Length: 81
Ligand code: SF4
Ligand code: SF4
Image (tube, rainbow, N blue to C red; front, side, top):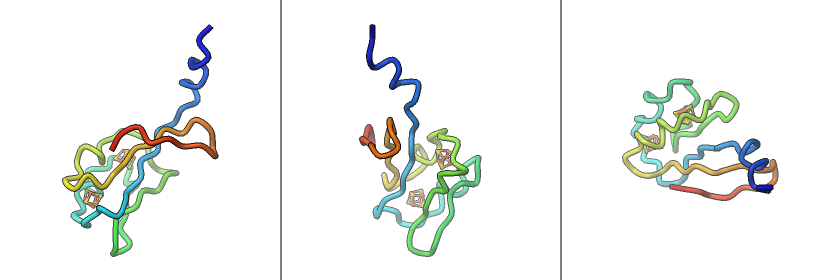
């Protein structure tokens, strides 16, 4: 009946840090999965460790973290920033 119902079940959120990162380390300390690290230029998220809790997004003072919805491996659409 509802074609979107099946998509909802396979949707995964993907959190990504962009160029707005000021390396304040707030997300690194806040992440319960220790999935965020810094390379000296910006923080980045290890997608294999991320548990998609959204805490990093809430803690970033610079709005440098975006969340995407992944419906298919090759297709992404941004849902919020
Ligand atoms: S969504 Fe949660 S687990 Fe994933 S990087 Fe952010 S704080 Fe860590
Ligand atoms: S909280 Fe935001 S600005 Fe700070 S290190 Fe994380 S992504 Fe960068």
